Image 1 (cartoon, helix red, strand yellow):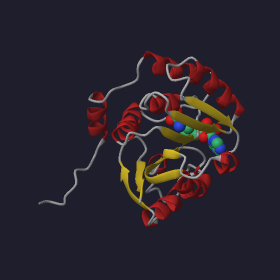
Image 2 (cartoon, helix red, strand yellow):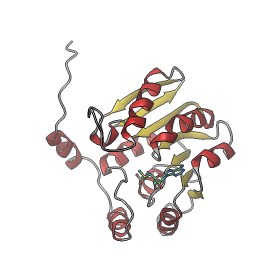
Image 3 (cartoon, helix red, strand yellow):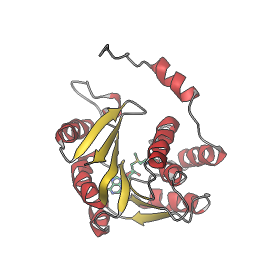
Image 4 (cartoon, helix red, strand yellow):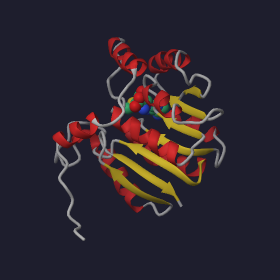
Length: 216
Ligand SMILES: C[S@@+](CC[C@H](N)C(=O)[O-])C[C@H]1O[C@@H](n2cnc3c(N)ncnc32)[C@H](O)[C@@H]1O
């Protein structure tokens, strides 16, 4: 058996994206309106959203925590993968983002499943009960990732998922002098994840690189 890997190019990304369930009209409108409202277009890619949904459905997740709501795109997408009675708790620090997301989530088909917590994840995560989630998705300030990971490992039940975005450091993983100020924090966090013995993890090359870990 060969251990060679195929070098994934932009063309492969376009190929797989064209063969993945994309955004429906609600999510397309949410992205467009968020951009028009001056909210940065840093939400996850549709194919990454689809993969998160697949992971949540395959593991029969009911209760999910998200760190970093932005405009509510990934919150709505993930909540759509949960069964009736499921919960998605999403945390957002920026009041303007929280306000936009709160209104969009309320207008969505999963309004009843989603609760937005406005505040610093460093404070909010500490209020969540131990083993109260099946999965956590980290997608906020990268300097906070190691702390969110520690909290996530407490909050997620054994066998649950720890999912972390931006393992490829906004495309600057191999830049000697990255211009993105968060890139060094991502690189440092990747080393922590690689050595974290409480998880079995792998970086999945979708979007900007997604860590997928299962809590042992
Ligand atoms: C990359 S965006 C999240 C994108 C979103 N998950 C999506 O794909 O639709 C990161 C968000 O994290 C928020 N954030 C940054 N620091 C935070 C903190 N300490 N606590 C909670 N949210 C924070 C930012 O304001 C921003 O809205």
